[in-house]
Structure formats: C-alpha cells, structure tokens
Amino acid sequence: MSGQTDLDGLLASITPELVEGVFVFVTRANREVPAGIHPRMVFEEAEGTTLIVLKVEAEAAGMDYEFPCRMITLSVHSSLSAIGFMARITNELARHGISVNPVSGYYHDHLFVPEARAGEALQILSAL
Image 1 (cartoon, rainbow, N blue to C red):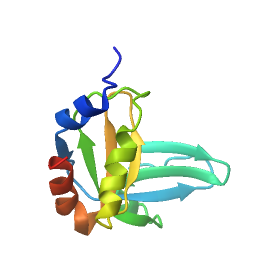
Image 2 (image 1 turned 90 degrees about the horizontal axis):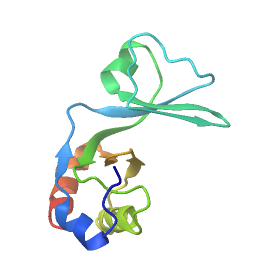
Image 3 (image 1 turned 90 degrees about the vertical axis):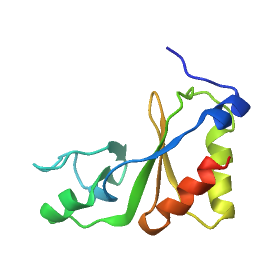
C-alpha cells in the first residue's frame, strides 16, 4: 500500500494531531534499551544509539536527555518518495522560528517540536 505523492494533495489532506506526552532525545553507547523505556524511535549512529522516549520514562531511568518536545503526527498517508512534502512543512515552521525534528514512518510523518511551541506549530500546520 503506497502513500500519496502529490504535494498539493498532501498539503490539503494533512490533519496535524498532537500526541499525548512530552518526548525527549537520549543517546546510548550501546544498543541496550533500559527496562521501562518504550522508544518511539530508535536510530543507530556511529557515535551511539538515539532514542526518542517519553520524558517521564527517561527521568525514571535516570537518563540524561535533550530537547523536551511534543510529537505532532501528520495524519495523511504520505509516500516515502513524496517530493517536497517535508521540505514545505519544515520551511513553514522555520519561517516562524520553530525548530523541528521530523521522522518519517511507513504510513505517516511525525514532527518533534519544542514543547512550548506545540500549539503554535499546530496552528501553522492547520493553515497550510
């Protein structure tokens, strides 16, 4: 099941949804995921393993973290080969001074934006 590739159609179809909870980025020197941690994302880099986890889980495990953020899911099934979709979205948020760490899944794209600016990001995305 392939997703949508038409940029205009994608932009017209997105309904941004704010996911419950505050997320953070952590890194591990090895691939070990501590007990009680349920990552939203795991990515292997040369320097270590990046995890995106709930802040409460990271704190409970005594893990150092960066970038407290909210996750916004774009509820349109975008194709992994859609051209310009994430660029358009991230550029619009950048125009408003909002940093974003996008993650593409098989079905949807997810945006991690600063916790304090999540409401503003939702408004901007809804207006696209």
